[in-house]
Image 1 (cartoon, one colour):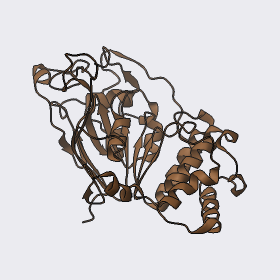
Image 2 (cartoon, one colour; image 1 turned 90 degrees about the vertical axis):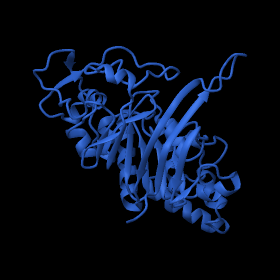
Image 3 (cartoon, helix red, strand yellow; image 1 turned 45 degrees about the vertical axis):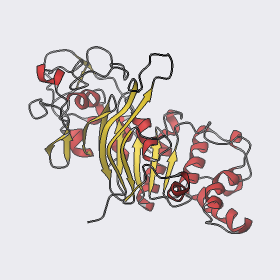
Image 4 (spheres, one colour; image 1 turned 135 degrees about the vertical axis):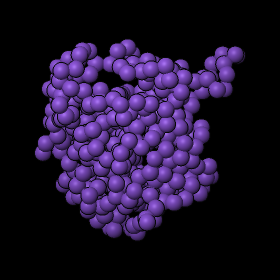
Amino acid sequence: MTAPVVRAEDLGKLFPDRGGLFSKAETGVQAVDGVSFEIDRGEVLAVVGESGCGKSTLGRLLLRLIEPSSGRVFLDGEEITGLSAARMRRYRQHAQMVFQDPYGSLSPRRTVAQIIAEPLEVFGLVKGQRETREKVAELLTQVGLPTGVMDRKPRQFSGGQRQRICIARAISVDPSFIVADEPVSALDVSIQAQVINLMHDLQRKKRFSFLFIAHDLAVVRHMADRVAVMYLGRIVEIGDKDRIYSAPHHPYTQALLSAAPEAKLKRTNKRIVLQGDVPSPRKIPSGCSFHSRCPIAQDICRVERPPLASVGPGQAAACHFAEAFPIPRTDDPDPVEDAPHRRAVSS
């Protein structure tokens, strides 16, 4: 059996408070809390959840752009947590990132050719200017940009074109793993689908493993093989995309999916409205972190943290009553409201 390309074991990140004489080292924002999963070769794992749930922090932990407070990360079978900068350098070729902001992630002073060529030159994958420009031209073609633009600077491109440049830079070194952090959320709706379809086609062709961070469930359904749902730094449900969309077991997953008509929950066309606000990550509730908003919370939920346990083939949920909570019916009592219309991904 082939080993997973990426494995996270009990991964955590606490951003400690840094002010005040009496602040404690263990206090602060618990952005990621005890997260474990694997990503197989050529697989796309999408991570979804509300803003502030820890999705972006998780992606950066996997690439060691920030250091974990606890847990371990393995890339291509070797633990990279704790490696020195010198030893970590050789893994950078195998793990790349596409950031959310295509404007801020490109140097305004460099040309497109210089931006895309940088990782190629750093890792010694090209020799001489001619070979470099030939490779840059090949990469531009792969992301749907004309080769004649390589001497232009980022300010001369639209947001969608800049994100294509970022994608070309990420795939230039043939990585085995890419993290894409909300890669289309900063783009106009009219071009989001084009960029998503490009990434989907490149992933299928090159077979790199993919952590795809998003909040748009239509985009996730188009891209993912598996889906992980995060709430307050923890994975509350994970599994095969089709099983998550057709038979979600965690109440939070059900609420997210009910807000998106494209999710097509069985027997329902109404939205589950969660009560209250998301608690602060500075003070995560005891027991199940979702209990303060959960419609089926019981006493055990307030004191005992539920494990991420199997609820069926290839699917796990962290809920004491995962098997008991059915998909909501159209005749269920409120609180519900009609789900708003949302755009589906199309070419």
